[in-house]
Image 1 (cartoon, protein in one colour):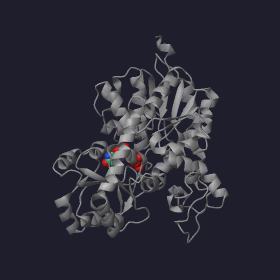
Image 2 (image 1 turned 135 degrees about the vertical axis):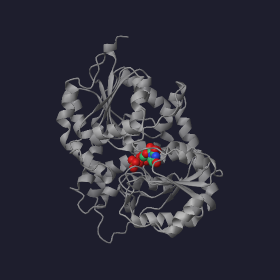
Image 3 (image 1 turned 90 degrees about the vertical axis):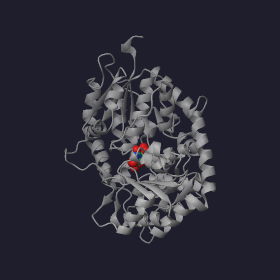
Length: 479
Ligand code: UDP
């Protein structure tokens, strides 16, 4: 085949661990099918990837694969971790349009054999400016939403929720009040389950809420949407989204999809971590009884206070369960002493690492529960592994995800808005002992559905094939 006729796909993720991880996996899946791919990172994320992984060597095996970088428009020493990710997103949305357009128009993102980008897959959080550029240069664009479909649908409904006077949340609000104007969720979505950015007094101008909602409303402008989910999990919600965006490729859970298709090529699993992984926890897990350990991780962005740390820690220690805890170096804001009794009891039943190989941890037979911040990638990884969850959402989509985990999918419990050692202890006991079989059964069933969707004939498997075909044949028309 004439190389010049090969399509080149640009993949441009939101610069944070979850989206970079899942979009790099998609990039590799496209590459495996012979597509030429350019992966566009911010310099700081690319630097961290190079520092902690072997991506450079790994992707150098693929002809036509390129890593490129684009500035996020912030000074080099500007904070980018924790909540600062929202500033990075806002800065890219404000500052990057002209450089992005220039890079595409000047063929800077291509190689000699496939110089021009013929299709873009861009994180939907950049849907506005990237779609403007796509339209100006007449390049088909697909929005990849790395959030749950349920949160996307809530975002799409927020203008109606505001219009109906159900937002803003006022002082002394009953946070358990049901929201009636998010179709399909009328019977269970409470005020407290709305995305965290809704907890502001000025819903018309708050910058984070604006980014979150306005960018989602750009989705119908794209030729198609990619979602990291599967039909048996979010089918009813996907039907709602399809009323606005008919062309959706649901291809998740992407991490497992990647693993399965790569296995066919005799490749093993690789890390896309932006932090240094501490694999010593795997040997510790090997020494623990089956399903006895609760894995505790709040993802790559969450920041907790010293008091919250101590509450979680006492709750875990008092529950008498074994636990493996990811305490990132930047997890806790503020200094303080750790009570000696906590350290002592942790030595007996607990293990702490700075960053874990999470997919491997969740797949380990010793792990029987996950205390999670309900990030979408963590939620999917837990579902695939058949591990029930205790949810303690921190921000953004996590408030919605945790409600679905507990109330709709019945895969665990939701602890949102509470951080108290007694509640932690009780929930850990429920998950790991009292209601263990009940949760385990549902989790195993959902895991089976997830795996079925990823095998030949399954919905995610077929949708990925279709996506690749549509890109390869230039069949991405209007939605
Ligand atoms: N993760 C990991 N090791 C850890 C904690 C997290 O590899 O110790 C990975 C996890 O597997 C997931 C990602 O980091 O793929 C976190 O993404 P998620 O969407 O759950 O949360 P975020 O970090 O975006 O809040």
